[in-house]
Image (tube, rainbow, N blue to C red; front, side, top):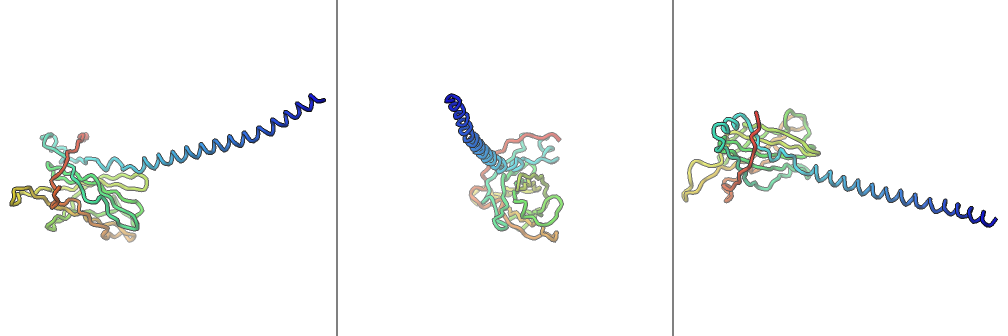
Length: 224
């Protein structure tokens, strides 16, 4: 009888000790799952926070291809510095500007616009903005084309303005090159479908000491 009692007690003891092990295992795996989920969310946020590749793209059209076919060595893409990269437009929302390129062979000026998609309230075709460049003399340039992309809560527009010269024809009294200045003016569609001023941005300051400073951008010519 004593042996039977000992075995029976052992079974009861095993049952009682197995339950806490299951609970601990569940808690442990839940903890691991939460940690993995947090890590995945952080990775996702890091990936989506990175700008879309279109931001740095060299846009090419027929004029670009023709110039390149005639003399590939003459087609240079120059990257210039910019002022403060963004403008605040609405309750913490910003419009950001990046990658200012100029192509002297074709007189094309390219840059990117990044914006929060929720600043746009009205309906539109193409893009929600009307764009124009205004030089230091008040001349207006409105001939442009673009490509667009989106990533998460941001929208991207890569813009190419035509007939934009940066260098002026003559030199100053000290024999230095002179440059034009260009201000980008943006109008945005509203809820009524009309366009109203959004912001102004000095995209190229020809009076700056660094106006003539640039670096060449490497590019691959896309097939037509």
